[in-house]
Length: 211
Image (cartoon, rainbow, N blue to C red; front, side, top):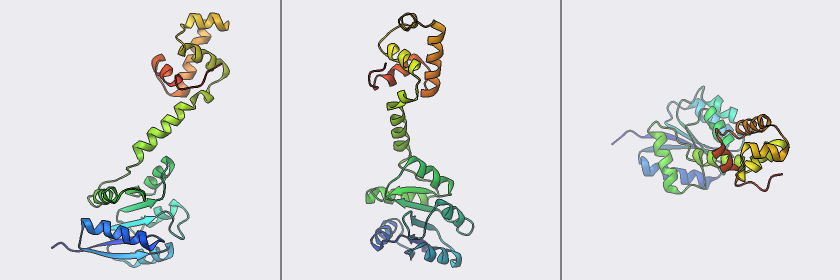
């Protein structure tokens, strides 16, 4: 029989504290739990505790006002920290990583997914299951509205490129030099973070009609 581990659960809602305990017990039956319903209780316990193997803390915990408080915990709490939240954003993921957390998990995860996340952290890994989806969503949103970053001249050139026009045809129709057309395209590549005409057209196909 393994020695029991100490897990601290900090959440203002008793029902979530209980749910987290159930999830941890599925992985390690030999667990000593300590609970905190606000930041003051959590900080007091951590400063006095000798050994803690895991801390699970909710971002909505009463008294927790910024991620800098989590970062400060690392000076006297050297265990992995799992942060729970009602909803995640890419900025929040980056912030919790910078604060030294080992995981950020949404409370909307299924019990099985949540247990898997805890298992990864207890095995020494990091777990940010929302990162790829958030990055893809952010990239898709950027591309969908990317035409807003272009100047009027760049929109005119990209719009005609999308319709299959050659540089020479675009230059003649807009009464520009081919050099100016190429400059507009280079600017569009840079602003939209693409490398070639094919990628640019692929993005532009989802845009509304351009001037």
